[in-house]
Amino acid sequence: MKLLIPGPVTTRPEVRAALVHDFAPWDLDFHPLYAGVRARLLPIAGVGPETHACLPIQGSGHFVIEAALRTFVPREGKVLVPMTGSYAVRLTRLARECGREVLHVPMGERERVDPRAVAAALAADPAISHLAFVYSETSSGIVHDADALVGVARAHHRRVIIDAVSAFGALPLDLSAMPEVDAALFTANKCLEGIPGIAVAISPRERLVGRVGEAQSWCLDLADVHAHAERNGSGSFRFTPPAQVLNALSVALDLFAAEGGRERRLERYRANLKVFADGVRAVGLSPYLPRQLQGPIVFNVHAPDDPRWNLQSFVDRVKERGFVISNFFDTVTPSFRVGLIGALGPEDFREAVGAMDGALRELGIRNRKAA
Ligand SMILES: *Cc1c(COP(=O)(O)O)cnc(C)c1O
Image 1 (tube, helix red, strand yellow):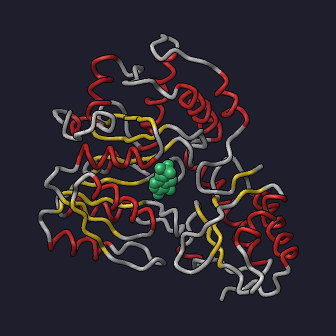
Image 2 (tube, rainbow, N blue to C red; image 1 turned 90 degrees about the vertical axis):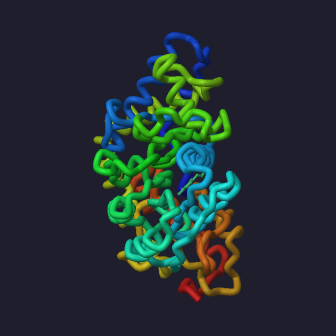
């Protein structure tokens, strides 16, 4: 079964095979494995261990987003969030539930964040300590201009937190040119094509010093993750590590390097996008986004305007043909959602379009166009 969802993604058999080994966390064989994973993630963000720390914690993406908010946003600080879609809503909830005030930059679902609107919001409220934004908005599929947004924060002397969960490993991110970024956040199971269970922050080392305890949560304290590594070595995990998941991530990083790194991975995802976008148009379906807004991570297709359309029935029939897509939509008007990422190539997406075409026929859908 191939997962056409934006995480967890389809993984290669070598990655899944790495789960069969048992580890004792303190075993000296595990230490270099874990230290190696941490070291190899930094250059994907354009940085090295002199300036930045790689801070993994157990859990999914939400856990590390909360950890970054707790660790870096002062309790009396305020977070500005551009309302890009449902992951901006999640970011807002995470911040509010740990007691941080959130302000929004309102915007439409089908537009890129306007850096001028962010600049105006920052200028209007000096109490905003952080700009926090979603780089690749997994609901709409739009990739926002991270360089421009970080540039606005720089001009206004504010700090930045980037939810790069569905971007990291494919879309460019050069933290060496972004000293105001307190944390770039991602997980093992999206563009890195690993197994779920580990989430990661990359943060400037100097920002972690003297911060232990600020998070008011031992589990979600990134400064404590850093302090522990400084004390016990980079291969030591604070609590029981998800060792099998880290071993799988290590294999996924081998495969990432063998593919040629981030640029090649992005090329493959762009090739997936091209085949899929051309394919859905060719079978009479309507893409949700105009071409110039469509990113290479997530693709939404308008639900056909036909009384026989039923998302779950469609999902079931596509699944019978070997592909799993989301059985919910995350857009204002009905759609279905396809992830372009994971260990899949253009040929898989050609087949996926065929599977969708077959499913629509079986459902008796006559009008495939959007309402
Ligand atoms: C997947 C994702 C997350 C994290 O989701 P989890 O289910 O907690 O892993 C956060 N932000 C974005 C943009 C995502 O795509």
